[in-house]
Image (cartoon, rainbow, N blue to C red):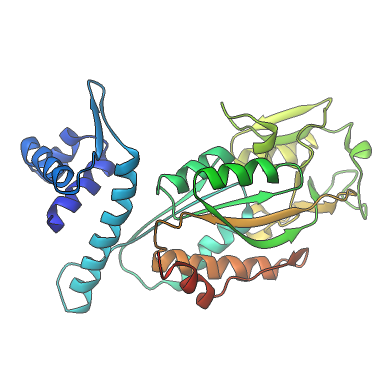
Length: 322
């Protein structure tokens, strides 16, 4: 095994094919194919499925990729520490449900880093994709919520995928409304008072199970329902059609404008917000800093009852033996 062979595998995954990788790296395709075969023979695994349609990572390949990235990252750290001219580029990927606080924490992460080079990814995506991203090592951290309704199913899926849920906060249910909505100044609202207004929710694609819904009361029928795929569209519709959505109540005026307010929803349900990890992968330094920023942001939201705060020490100890 050589460092270059590991770098080739990582590059093939990033570019999606051996031919495209060869073009980008100015390396002959047989050289790349030989490097992959050498690694497969050495470790007795199959890294890529090969077919007429191209290549795809196997389950063994996904796990191998996670370790390969760690080895390459550590090699970059050595070069950086001992004065190599090549500069280390930090990488970090986060997958999350559509939460303003997750973006707030990401902004804090960028602001506190003094790096000349980095490559970060923030995916606001569907619940099933969050689980898959972390399982496949495409993201280090996934952010979602559990409730009494979805907890049994989601925990079973987490266990099946060998993922771990780490609780961060418990949030009381709220609704988002535009500031001049007829219900915006109520001390609380009920599902009955909301019924005349359009209900806005995030569509979940082909995995459109009630258990994957980002909103509480996903099985409740609505006379008017609008499904969207991104947070910007949802907030624009809140402003334009006097709609509402059920949420954690944590809204950022800096990111979403001051014309959206949250009003408590009168119901006993709670949202347990947390992050998921794959214990077979180490958290990068940037991911650990992101979790610290996430805890600070959640603490700053006064409408959230914090039940667990993940500090630097616990994050480090949680993964030091992985």
